[in-house]
Figure 1 (cartoon, rainbow, N blue to C red):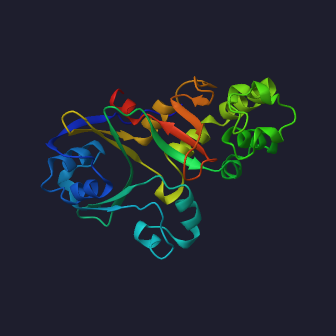
Figure 2: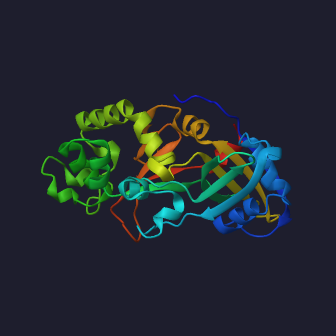
Figure 3: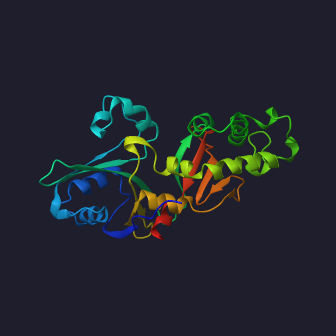
Length: 280
């Protein structure tokens, strides 16, 4: 589905501790002259260390004001798209010697541990996804029944007595067959767009790379995988669209679920297992 133009790079950290947070990773890049780890990452990102004059990395927060957006190279006209579809957690600027060239690499950072099997990568309301991807009112209606935004009793065509959670929600495998087929067709026909939006994003803060750090819960040592975003999209998006064992939807190795819990209990969420990137 996507071109595999760069391989994954996998390594380990000798220092013990907890999870590597976003600011710690930025500190590693900023200390690139003394950090073998940063040099390894930069080499894998196809940079000749002898040609680098300087590297500066900054954390990209979840929310960015218009006032602060200029620090991330975002113009006023780009602000809405960049912040709405943001996937970058760190932005690394590489200054090349003897030129005025500044290369910018946006990294999506994922923390996981050796016992973990999922990581939320996108969460929005059904209405927001409808605006993004253009599915019709009928699919929006049934997806709201799936999330619990609309209650099953509001759908007169359903036999409430046959539902697993008749007071809260409807599972995908409880949809009428024609609605299931229509939903599957939509995800199949728009798979590349959907995978790109939830993994890479759009605009100035879309991701160029995914850096996964995995904490071994027994030794407290971190290992890491640095993966080109196209390779990551190919990995997670590869596979069929089908009903998951729990009555949700699987899109390749991506699971679509209702959010549940708090906050935003009736939103849709997409989840992946980032540890899979250690296997490619």
